[in-house]
Image 1: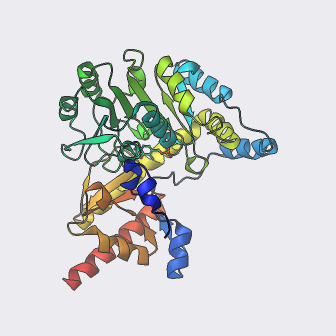
Image 2: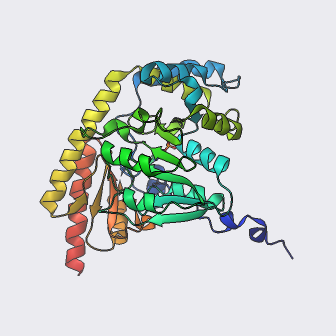
Length: 372
Ligand SMILES: *Cc1c(COP(=O)(O)O)cnc(C)c1O
């Protein structure tokens, strides 16, 4: 008889479901035998990478026989001069997802409580589950975080609170006043992880980055990524900013060479390509307006979003709508696993991609009405 390896896994891992990524274009085209599909499913930057980043990656390949600089000295210096935080407060990760994972492994034991919101980014659930910690999920408030409810959920066992500002997949956000009031209520032994993967896109005047508050709150960790507005999702690089003592702990858990040479070099290069960032943010705002207008014309409602995606309400089970869009060569993201079975999340694409989605969406909605 073969061994039941499932019984050997930790209780957390036994209950774990793998992360469901957006469907790759190649996979769809292989399955349906079609071409020219578009992917608006993973909140990637539709513009393509920065020319400066590409040049840096190409040059860096000559060093591929070497291990990367495990301390990430150059990138930490660059971040430090740009934003003013000390290099000793920076943890580099293989994407910010890596940083979220490292935080979980540094601080969570089975039975510890982790608080996050309903409809929040699913990686928080994965981090809690993989460490066999106990997830405490607070109800959402108009799709966003109910910070009061989250603060009220703190107990002696709470170790980590995950906040996403803006949140994915809802695109919701909270203001600086709310963040300050929240932090003032949280005891210092509870670590607040503020995930700001989409911060570069936010133009609301009362938005406040946690980076402004980090020096006031030693228990606050901010995570940022190069995957979204900086257009480097495929290279996998992000970072956390935290108190030096916390950073020291994270550095003990981190794999020594968790960030590769091309990623480090590309990140340094794109930080100085301010034109690129500005252009991508403008492209996103125009694309968001285009999608909102198109949805309005279709009579489809959406959750107001400050990210690079919009989550639309199909008014029915979104599964068949998703499947029908795939047949039109348009890949979006179902969010039933976020407790949102009627919604689809659509990444803001290039103008022609947004147009193509809206045309396909119109077609699919009309066809499904005929079927009813
Ligand atoms: C995309 C995303 C991330 C980051 O992903 P990485 O590519 O691992 O940096 C983190 N948090 C949220 C909310 C996201 O949507």
